[in-house]
Length: 259
Image 1 (tube, rainbow, N blue to C red):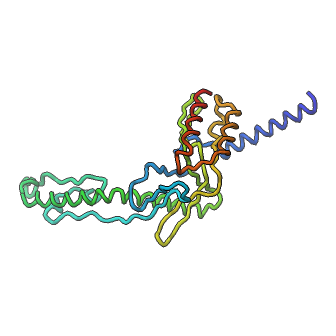
Image 2 (cartoon, helix red, strand yellow; image 1 turned 180 degrees about the vertical axis):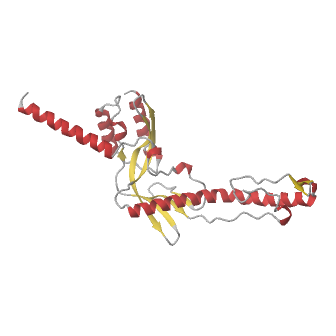
């Protein structure tokens, strides 16, 4: 073995070691669920405090304010002792105790017409409250989740990177399974304490092709990955406008299927 061959072998070993070390420190995430934090825009509750951009070219992705919660209407005195726990939870159905026993006498709830009427009126009022309160509480939970994320970003400055993802690649192979957006663009999170409101905004960074999803895939050749990356760099993608990415994504699926 020549000195040149020995040098190449050692250099190859160093590269292999560095690659293995990097994968151990920064493993490739191929499942959205494995990300430290994720917010699916299509699953957000419909509520006035959550505003998604509607116009192409807008700089913000989504705005999330703090929803105002309201308590459930309390049951009137006539049925207060007949309503089961959980009546103040908008995600639960109100229920009553159908029978009671007092001094060895069994009392039926429906035995009192005034009690039944009081319940019907209160139940109708509560249903109207629950219909508006459910999305409000869901929106409030989203706000709290983003608030916790914002505090974490402040504490761990530079370690957390936020990206907007588009085009989820769902691909199952014997060796690996992928369920993750393949187009990514960096975004930033700002907070307006006066509103209060969180704003996810696009940055000037270009859209990137998440090549790490495919690098260890044995059926995808590096040449194909390089071609797709080059196409992505030349394209003028707007991840908030699906019409700019749909043709690219359809073509990518076709090429991967025939790989």
